[in-house]
Image 1 (spheres, helix red, strand yellow):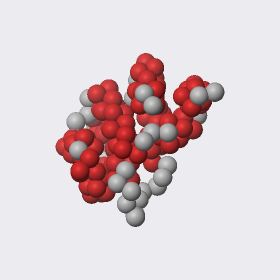
Image 2 (cartoon, helix red, strand yellow; image 1 turned 60 degrees about the vertical axis):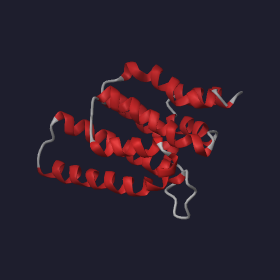
Image 3 (tube, helix red, strand yellow; image 1 turned 45 degrees about the vertical axis):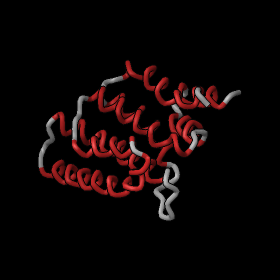
Length: 163
């Protein structure tokens, strides 16, 4: 059974983390940031969320010479995440703030993958790329975007089909 078929079987049986691992580990290191960014772009388009930190991250992923900035971009995203967590503890969040909170962890994973593509000595967790697929699949359901599952599978597996 091909890697793609194995990943699809995991996907269909609700094992998105295993599907993500198979896909991510079989992508060339230099393709990983763009792959991760394409998934974030998909989520941003579906949600309608806009944020300057997301734009900075996507700009970074689009320019290989900037991938080393992934750690700094991650730190900026984490700061926003912590601010939103603090806000949530003190008051109810508006709908757009809730959507932002759902997408921040995904963006953090994309920043980690981008930084790790530079092969730094202080890399983030090696499973960050695997988590992207699982996180998005789970949160599409929370955003009532179940109709996007087929489109999402095509997106996450696209790079693998070209290898």
